[in-house]
Length: 243
Ligand code: 13P
Image (cartoon, rainbow, N blue to C red; front, side, top):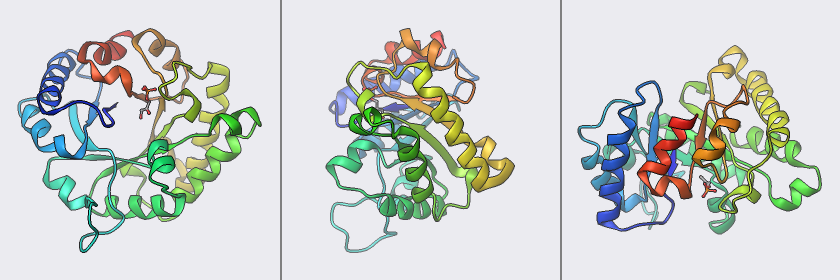
């Protein structure tokens, strides 16, 4: 999954979408999802018009309201109307810079799923919490609170992104990651029963082609959520190649 964040401009987005889709063709058994900025969605949908079915479109956030007087917000229905099938919820940058708490994220998931959007819930601890040995506790707490209203595990994926590994070049070690994914998996099984096993789990934080192989060696990990390396089609699709 490619999170473009707030990067690029109109010609850049179109080219990146086209090139990524073209290169992704080779990997029919992988699913690729692009998350461009809101204002790029229409152009990217056009660029993906002839893309294979393994490339899908998503948005980086969604309103917790259905419609109405909510200046600046973007509804789930607006996103599906632009061809989105996915949405990110609770990215650490939205939590930190937009002050989005878990309770709000729970509402976003509910509203988005009601419109059929697949929600990718992002969770992860800060450096301070990591150093205090609180990673598992924080991540499980975020998961429980954000999924308080979620009953549809079919429309859910979970991305674990340690905040201290985002954009820093620091990748969590396999020893860091393994117990956390085991806990996430167990929490999902506790909540959804055996269906919890079908929720896709992703890792995010400085993922590149040269560390992808190691990340995918963790049994529970089904995919990766990529920031910086997704801004170049070749470096993004090389992640799939190396994995
Ligand atoms: P980087 O890959 O740039 O570390 O970003 C990760 C991320 O935040 C994806 O959502």
